Image (cartoon, rainbow, N blue to C red):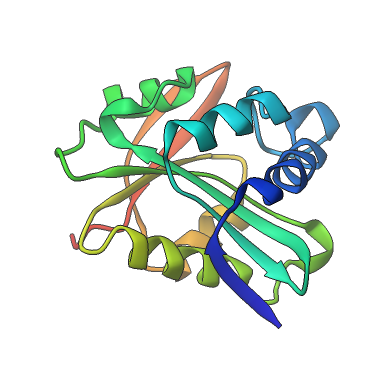
Length: 163
């Protein structure tokens, strides 16, 4: 049974491994440094990391950060393209184990984020050449609100704020 919850320190290694498995270096769509050290820094900073687990196995992860504190170059480019209000948070990266997709993990992660950030706007970006992620997030009620180029790729900005 899938259960979404805030990550604990004991989850960090599994999160880093899951994200590394799905990084662009390994043929996935996630870009950037998502080493264990980076995940530990994210956790220590106090931003919410949400995991989906099936028993004791982490099968999905959603990292979030306060909108004005997003530090990754792609997140900064997104916020330049779509300036957010003071209560917005950056949603992502989100990563789901490829063997577990289609089991409701993304909706579970999103629902837990909404519980953690009640009434706040989630803002994220997706590479335009990733229609599966775009479709999955649209099913959650997110909509495209902007776009920006980054690292030679077109990226779409999505928000879950009412339009």
